[in-house]
Length: 277
Image (cartoon, rainbow, N blue to C red):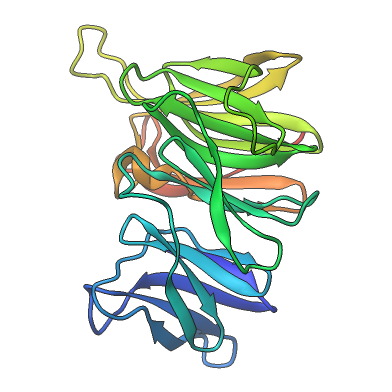
């Protein structure tokens, strides 16, 4: 359910095929062309899809609370860092910021960090709105761009944070409307936002889902593309789309299960975006 590369090897995290109630990390074998070297988290520790290579370790979240640390080939610290309580609304995949070498990840309305050596974790920022659900983080110059939405009102927004742990209120915010924001990405200095206008066919307006791509035009988020579709989701709904992303060589990739007009069934599609949109 989650993948990353460490020391030129590809690792994946998911459930243990022998004991589905626990999680496991697998290493891809380039010779056998399959997943091998299973390392189980043990017990009933169920991982999320987050898997981040940082400072020579792999990090992830288990049982919707604890950050675990894996040191290949087989050493686990399953409760390496306590996020402070059960995650209520969701998490945002980790990033390692190039300016300070620190790993950052989000849970609910909080951002946590792991130092540049991978030795310790701590709480970095709590957003003042307790109903805010962070969905994605990305590096944007010296800043971190934070996106998410209010779980009560449905309003999405983007925030810029200077990585100063003393900051408790963020003044630079950009309203993104009621389309659920899934991803943000900065490509060669240009910020983009990926949003989903969810299916409302049961409403009097009978609207179908729309996949929306916006970019930050000065200080105004501006719609670049809208893709009306018959259906747009993942196996786990919108929550399953959050985190389904990858960045490589100034391109941003994200996945969704999409059924376009005229198609008889939904397909798993990988979208690609470059700095020109």
